[in-house]
Each structure stands twice: as C-alpha cells, then as structure tokens.
Length: 315
Image (cartoon, rainbow, N blue to C red; front, top):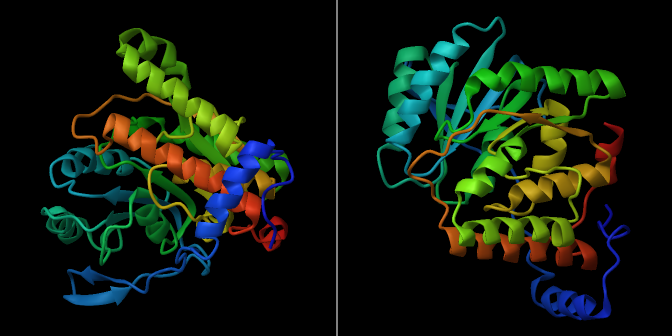
C-alpha cells in the first residue's frame, strides 16, 4: 500500500495542521468491509444473500440508488426508470440501498420487487445510517453488473442520457485497452445559466467548494465531481469502493483522488439535470461538512493514515 502524497507539496503551516489532525485521527480507519446482508425474495418469502463484487459479473448493468427517507421521491424516479429499462437490450438489476430510513422507503421498494421480481429490483436495508457514500459503497460491493451506475433517488439526472454515458465509458475502455474507466455525468455545461439564477451566497459557496476540491482534494481533471450519476466498469468499482474512506457528502472527491493515483481514466459527459425538491443538503452546514472531509482526505493520505493498494494498478 502507498500513501497518496507525492504530488501534494504542502506549505509548513499546512504541514503543522496535517500533523495536529493526524495525531488525533491516525488510528481512525473506517470499516470498509462489505456487510453480509440479505434481501427479501417475494416469490419465496425467504431472505437471500447479496452477491459480492469479487465474483464475476452476471448482468450487464447494475443501478445502485442510495435512499434515506425517500418514500415520496423514489417512486417518481422508478416510474420513469422502469419504462426506460423496458426498451434496452441488455440485462440489468436495481439495488436500492435504504440508509436507515425512518419512513416507508423499504416498503416502497418491496412493492416494486413484488411487481418486477427481486432479480430486477431489491432492497438492501442497512442496520444504521452510514451516509450517502457509505450506502452506495455497500450497494456496489454487492452488485452483479459488468458496469455499475449510481444514481440519486430524486432522478434529477435524465435517465435518457444513460446511452451516451455508457458509450463514453465503452470508448474510454477501448482507447486505453483496459478494464478500468469512469464516465461521469456532468452539469458543468449548466453552470453559466445556474450562476445567473442562483443567489449571491449560493454562488460564493459553490466557488468555495470548487476551490477546496482543487486545493485540498487535489482533483483538477473533473469539473463536476458531485453529480449523482456516475458509471464505472466493474473492475474500477471494485478498486475504488473497496478502498474509499469517506462515507458522506465528499466521498465523490476521494473516489477521483484514488482513481488518479491508480491511473484510472475518467471522462465527463454532459447530462440534462433538473433540481428536485426535497434535497438532503443543507447549504451552509453541508458545505462545511464537505470542507472538513476534504481536509481529512488531504491530511490523512499525506500522513499515511489512509493509503491505496498498488495491487489494483495491475488488475
């Protein structure tokens, strides 16, 4: 394993901060293992174990949807998603990861499993809330797809953009003759219009976050790191989500930090996106949480508290 620090020269003041934070957190290594969970098969009434991403893929596409108190917004998305999937010519599965919801999210997903079958859609119920990144990690580590998409439960990104995202990933894999690659749904092309309609304080927060991503996260090759529509090859999903540490809002940034270290290519694809009411993001608080996580990413990799295994470079 290796720490990610070679390309991150730090000034003495930041070194001191890194040292002080590192002393406090060096022993705090998160539990990154796959939970041994099961899902309800409505046909048999039995609970069956989820597979592992270490196994060979058996469907073409897995769609992983993190859900926390999404009993209202999730059905709206699924009623768009299923008609779209009825038109495709490849096999797929949908895993909805319930992240400790207090509403009827689990019951909603079970109703769709009864209608379409648990081989098509099933619910992974986490025993406790882990955060969006943690929920996505557990779903991806238990998927069957050769390609793995995670998509937000609000359906803010137009599912009809999936073909061009899949094509971008296929082209990337073909161009580098590798099993590794990421196609990133991106709203960067929408930013000019958004800047014109956002409030001054929201624009300040947006620019501040982008600055943190660049200077603390060390990610300068992706303009929109936070769009909830990302497609991975199975090998890449395995390499990234097995090693990811951040489980809340800034997990996307760490994925790109790890991918850059491993030399995994990523391509941005412009997607259609609409803001949907009911976001769990609380503007100022969530941005502060993200800034804290970005600082954590920088310092913990710098001091070697977190590291990335070089074995994935050869896979």
